[in-house]
Length: 351
Ligand SMILES: *Cc1c(COP(=O)(O)O)cnc(C)c1O
Ligand code: SF4
Image (cartoon, rainbow, N blue to C red; front, side):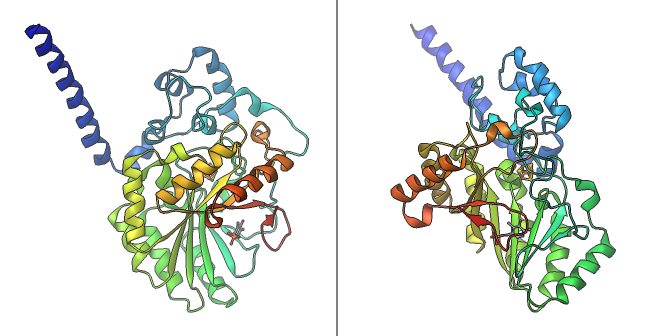
């Protein structure tokens, strides 16, 4: 008896030791290292998540259409062996991506037409800058899965031209950093851009559209908080979280809390995705978890009809019905606006 008690105590001690080592080691990697160590090989993904080998051929094929990319910090939130995991579905390349479906195309929102490099101005008062073409994660439903990122990165001269253009148009009061993911750029560069924009008197707000802090929470460094909060501009960070499970990360929640303490407004945009968040339970849980984490739900987008993502599409009547159920169940401030992106409109289209 005594012997068995002693050995089971030793086993527990060993286990605790492993857990604490992981906790100490993980935050010591920089966000750039987490990014470099992202999983890009389907074989590695399947083995890390205990997904049966029979899914490998399809994953390899689909990853040739749009590469697999997912940092381990995101994989930690996926349940091993569960093919229906709502986070797994967002990142696992599957056979359905090669289906050709009517109404789905390579540039569904017609962003590639008539725009100067690196800038998109579609709506009054707001200009969107493509700060960085890279993302920390490749989301299978992304409308930019065919976007020519590399053509749209600005060099220093082009940045100067962008600043001049923004300075010459005093109808612009808000600059939006987008991409790709703008936080894939260094804090040094983002600080430099922000300082230039803050010198333009008619710019009031800086908005950053990013998924990076959700995927790699280490992305929010002291330097990040410094440039975001020391500028005279009001800073709004619009995160992209589609399922409450994405917030199941203590370190992420700490990081979000720090951003709130630094005076940064946190909003969220989600995409309504079949098999990921298209039930009233998932959508209410998402809103509740966002608010718990200090984030206000802003938009719920319908899927942009991009080639390779048709299997994520939720019918418009179902989307509207789900939204109505949210209205009936939640306080108004927890109901995101249900919107659709349409070409040649003065704003997103409310549904
Ligand atoms: C979505 C979007 C915006 C921001 O629209 P809001 O309704 O203000 O969130 C701005 N510019 C472009 C090109 C966009 O696609
Ligand atoms: S992070 Fe955003 S832009 Fe990048 S792949 Fe995902 S949805 Fe697309």
